[in-house]
Length: 209
Image 1: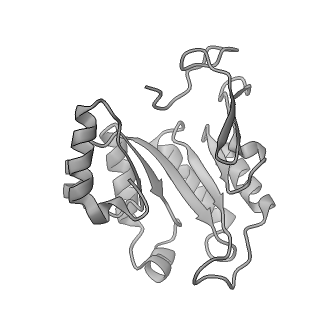
Image 2 (image 1 turned 180 degrees about the vertical axis):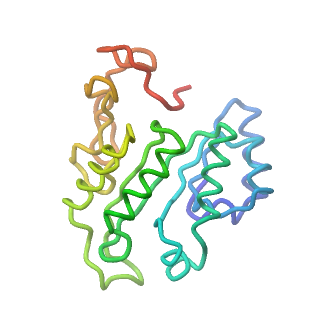
């Protein structure tokens, strides 16, 4: 449920999701995470997973560019985790606006506090629509942020909007072997034994059914 924000059509999404659940299907929100605890309590009855945009780790950024606040998004991530909803976090890195390495390390540490297995997707920004005055994110910035995320203890940090980069792939967090090979939106190879690494037996976290 995405594009637009699924909480905008929450009632319709809930009706569809309950029908999907009755047919054995899973439900995923791609969301900005800006919803009330009451809405999240309702969603927990049908929501299996969510990819949450954590747009910045600065409340000032949220107020200026999103017309919102940071803390409610952090609360949503904490509560989703508490309710055993599988979460992944996505951050669009915009040059000069939210690319401070200090801030991004703080963000990585927050995600780590939710669990080292929570994936963090670092997406490259491209000028578009009403923000064409800022150039695209340098590839080196994305790679640097990915390295920082792993240094802070995250097992799965992915480079987004950077086709062909090593950061698109999933590696075993224990032995480092390549488990899922990707190029852009395409999976080009899978090396798994059940849900685990065939080389060392480490289980790969996620939803596979």
